[in-house]
Structure formats: structure tokens, C-alpha cells
Length: 160
Image (cartoon, rainbow, N blue to C red; front, top):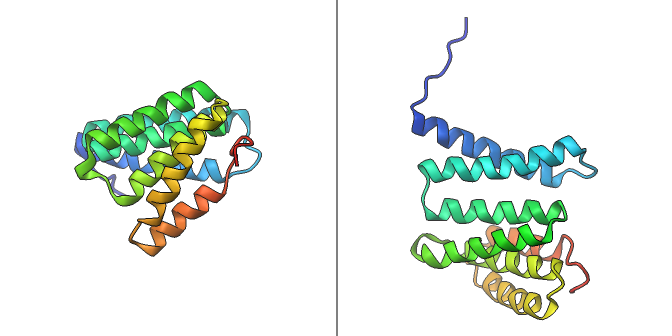
């Protein structure tokens, strides 16, 4: 008989944060999601952020806000996408010592896309330029490639 793994509360929060984060990326990559999958996507984004709030640091919350904004972009909910993109950036500034170079680039990309989605092309283009500039400074080639692929992809709502 298999034994069940025992977790402390903190370990459980960390496991749930990682698991829901992984599921978010699976669902974002899926074309033609069902309404149930869209619901799961949104709930998973908030759940992951919640669990990281319990056991993570500022960078985990910042990344959680990034994902929440990304999910709202995917679900075509402009105002919420922008609200969470702004929160993502605020946390990046507040916890700058914890941020990796790619966190800053993705925070700018998040703002650019959310502003574009909301029809504010001028602000969107400003953040897009900052995202490109920050992306060029990502030291790790693999991380830079992931960022550049994300920046080139997705819906830019006619901005670029």
C-alpha cells in the first residue's frame, strides 16, 4: 500500500503554488479552451498567488500578479489586466532587490500589453520600448529567448 506524503502547512502552500502555476501555463498554451478551462485558468492564477503570499517573497507575489494580468489578457478582460499589471510593476519596484533581470522585462511587457488592450496605444508603446530595452539586458540566453518569444507573440491589440 502506498503511503501518503505528509506536508507541513508551509510545504503544502508551496506545493499548491507550484502546481497551480504549472497548470496556468498549460492552460494558457492551450488553443480553444472551454469555458470550464477558462474558469480554471482564472481561479488557478489567484490560487497560485495566494499560496505564494503564504510562503513566498515579494518576487513570488510580483510573478503572481504578472500571471493574473496575463490570464485577464487571455480572457479579454482589459481593466482587470491593467489593474494587475500595475500591481505587478509596483511590486517589482518595491522588491527590486529580489527581482531577476527577466522579472523587470516581463513587468514592462505586462504593462505594455494591458495598456494596448485598453486602447492606450501611446502608453503601451512606451512600456513596449522599455520591455524591449530590459529584454536586451537579460543576461541568461535561455531566459532572454523565452522573453523575446513572449514579446513577439500574443495579441498586441493592433498596437504593433
